[in-house]
Image 1 (cartoon, helix red, strand yellow):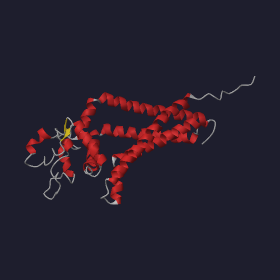
Image 2 (image 1 turned 120 degrees about the vertical axis):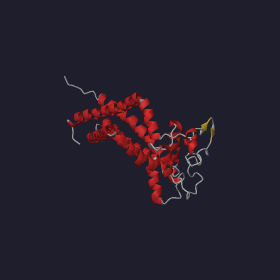
Image 3 (image 1 turned 30 degrees about the vertical axis):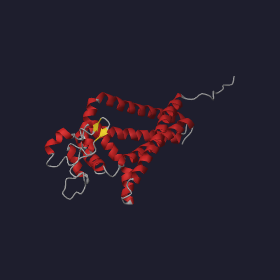
Image 4 (image 1 turned 60 degrees about the vertical axis):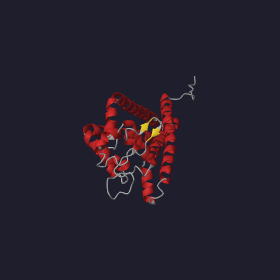
Amino acid sequence: MVKTTDLSYTSPYIKTLFFFNFLCWVFGLLIIPIGLYGVIHTAQGLYYLKSVENAYTAITDHSGVMVALGSVIFLVSFAGCVGALRENLCLLKLYFWSLTIILIVELMFAIACVISAWKAHKILLESVFTKTLIEEYRESQNTQNFIDFLQSEFHCCGMTDEGHHDWNSNEYFECSELNPSAEECGVPPSCCISYKKEMNYDIMCGYGIRSETKKHQLGNLIYTTGCGTAVINYLKSNLYWGAGIIFGITLFQMIVTYLALSLSWTRGKISSC
């Protein structure tokens, strides 16, 4: 009796790996155009800067980060998707090692944060957020919208433990007699407690609020806690939800990495890359 092979049979490894990666591929494909739109919008608003400064600000804006993140997700999931569908050993190996490197980097970052949480917190806030976000607040509409969202939603002002004093790093809000800006010695309106009142927005509420004559009114008019502290306090109050999400993402990555490795072993017995 002649044994026949069922050509319609598809390995569950292939089905599962293809399904997971197809979803990630679509997600990455959606992120890229959204980020590109933000980069173009930012670049158009920087016509007064030199071309090099223009490109740097547009790329380092969070829209540029979205493009980079979307591209990585798109390429890695594409390798996993096509590698599983075609049982291509080269693409499966690329996919496996890409996920392995990402997992190792995530693990190293998590360990560094646990071991030296305070130092990492200070470095991240002072070197990244203060320079990139505070100093470029008026240079990029995307950055401005992001900071306004943080400050109004988390009831904070500034990024570091210095709180509202961080805004002295921005040339428009700096307290200086040589500063010609109308916002001199002030803070953005999103720092104000009265900024969102029903549907009315008071865009001038932060003008001159850090001047000597108004310093005694600060606590009643603006938020004084830095957004870094406010966000960390929020995460602490929702620790179980955050831990569950992180665990879910890590578990998902480990599952698809195992599937890619299993399929690579199976395929490797038949052919080489």
